Image (tube, rainbow, N blue to C red; front, side, top):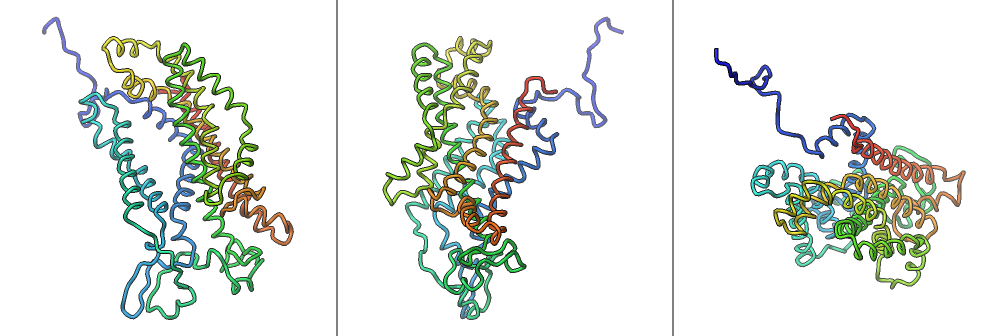
Amino acid sequence: MSDTQTTRPAAREGGEPLTGPPRTYGAIVWGQLRKRASAMISLAVIIVLALVAILAPFIGGEVPIRWVQAGETSWPIFRHLTNSEYAAMAGFALLLTLPLTVRRLRPRFEQIGASPWVRGVLIHGGLWLAVTVTLAVFREPERRYGFYLERAHEADSSWFPLIAYPRHPGYQELEIKEQPPSWQHPLGTGRLGDDILIGIVYGARTAMSIGFVAVGISMTIGVLLGALSGYFSGWIDLAMMRIAEVFMLIPRLILIIIILTVIPTWIPPVWAVVVVLGITGWTGSYRMMRAQLLQIRGEDYMTAARALAIPTWRLLVRHAIPNGLAPILVGAAFGVASAVFLEATLAFLDLVETPSWGTLLVDGRQHLQDLWWVWASAGTAIFVTVFVYNLLGEAIRDAIDPRLKV
């Protein structure tokens, strides 16, 4: 027998070696999240809320999905959907398929030294932008109201949404106003005969859009400015810190109230709120990214990358920013919950005229005992949404803890 003996790694029953490819940090964090039932339940609730918000016209309304009359088949709901609704559907589908794209293209990207997630986000972002621009240029939604519910007896066949009821009730619906929950209206009706369940469904759209868009804008600004401030330091860091301190002193609620009183009538108030929340809420993610970059820029792999003359922009995008994003995701989850609560507050103060849970709270407040189902439904929706986002944020915070078990 030879003095030197080759050591082979142990193998499983199927012949697969025990030592596999190293796990990425994202895979480790995801593994920790999957062990927590509260995190998975919260994530499932958030996905359901997003689906309800995006597919609201298919859940409640008076426009049918399919309409057959005199032998001719039409699909009215697809003509009535706005371009923004189609863009939201496309964005949600691309977001869900992003992990599949990254998995399929990972070997090719890793061969050229590129980040699979960064390239995947760029590809899906480009596809979404192309779809959005195409819709805006070539498509015009149908605005004509067909009175389909009144003419339902004329159709040979029709597929209405799950809750076939007008979003904006007329005189006929006033006969069933202020009705308690029943089989026809599971959450009852309001003061104008409006169905409360439809209001909850479309209120989810307002809450989700404000939360995700506002936090997306603030995170983008905060991450970019924080990366530049923490990496270059010096006078750049000093100037940006002073700017961040100014924005931190701005009372957002007062600023939103002032802007809502001076904006032109053609600007939707809800989008004005989104822009204000996004522009003024970036200081938290900025400070976290700055702190991460101050620590990361001295790491050995950053020093080696600079020694290899890697361009600064690629150094930040490929190495620095991805490695500093973990704690910012925690702030994003809490930020969405804060944005949802703030929007409900503005609607409760009658500053934003849009279908929302805060508007339902206002309607129920005027008759606390007679219309208890109105404020109870809206309050429950706000509580559940804020609670699951806070629960998910705490789970992510625990998962990215450096003392987690690998």
